[in-house]
Length: 141
Image 1 (cartoon, rainbow, N blue to C red):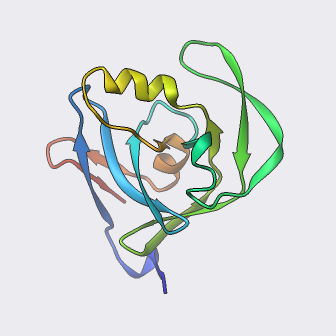
Image 2: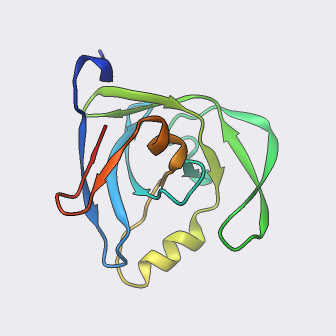
C-alpha cells in the first residue's frame, strides 16, 4: 500500500552530488527504484528510452519533437502518467519523455562510473515547489 504525500509535510529526499557537480537522487517510478539527475534547467522529466520496460511505462504511439540545450531537434516518445514515489510514499504522477540518455551518461562517465536512469526536470520541480539545498544535499517540498 502506498501512502500519499499529503499525509506528510514537509517531504525530504536525500540527494548526492557527483564529481561533475550534478545533483542526483534515488526515487521510484511505478515501484522500481532508479537514479535520477535533478536538473532545473531541463523543461521536462525524462527516462532513458531503453528503461521503458524496467519502469513499467506505457507510452503514447505518437512521437514529439524536442530540443536540448544545443538547440538540436530530436524525436522523443512520451509516457503515460507514471507514479513517482520515495520510500513507498507516492509524491506525484507525471508524464516522462523517453529519450536516448547515452550521451548524458557518457559525459558523466568521464569522471564517475555511474549510470543515471533519467532526469527530474522543471515540470516536477516547479509543480511541487521543490527547494534544493546544496549544503544539506536535499530536495524539500
